[in-house]
Every structure is written in C-alpha cells, then in structure tokens.
Image 1 (tube, rainbow, N blue to C red):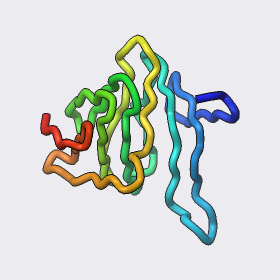
Image 2: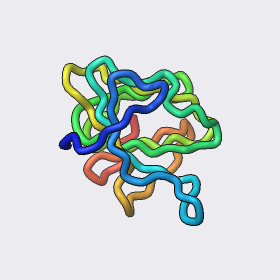
Image 3: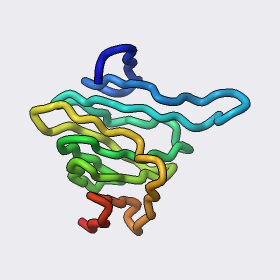
Amino acid sequence: MIDIVTSTLRFWEGARVWVIATPMTGFSETFSQHIMEVSPGGGSTKPEPDARAQAALFVVEGDIQVTLDGVSHRMPAASLAFLPAGSRWTLLNLARTRRRPRPHPRGQVAAKRSDNFTKYRSGLHQDH
C-alpha cells in the first residue's frame, strides 16, 4: 500500500488504516470497510467499542492472534474470522513484520461455528 491517505482508529496501537467505504446517509448507514496495517506488537484490546457491530477479518499476509470471548486463535494469511455482534475480541500482531487484516472479499460467505469463530484458508474450511 502506498500512503495516499491513512487514518488511525481509536483504541488501536501501532496501526494505520486505509478507508475504503464509510457509512453514508441515504445509502449504507451502518457499513464500513477498510484495510489496516498492524505493526509488530500492535493491535487493540478494545477494537470495536460498539457492542451492536459485527466484523469480518481477512488476513492478507503474515500471522495475527485474535482472542474471541477469551479463546486465542492464530490467524495465518488467507484466514477469515467472523465476529458476531456482542463478541468480546482483541487483535494482536505477535510477529516481527507488519500485518494487514481487512474485511473479507466480496462473495465469500462466513459460516458461524458454535464458538463463533470460522476460518477459511485457500477456500477450504479449517477447524482448529
């Protein structure tokens, strides 16, 4: 990514964001999409302050750790996580290089598992 315009998000450390879509009156008032680069040791213990919001994370490169409702999950490149509304989650880059989680690609559907965590890698479901 090149630095045309980057932003930061409240409650995130060592991260910068490229905003793709934001809520707009008269169109989609609740949807936002962005690409995020997380520096080594960066992340958030409070990534989504709105309990009504749900999220989908897609890891472009590297590995990150997502803790969902107290259970930690390693997410390598090409992993997808669906985080339902009301979930308590955190994200941390434990690696030595930058990581870019981003909203999942258009057309890919995330199925909800009993522990609210779903991963996809190379189009194949992996249960860990």
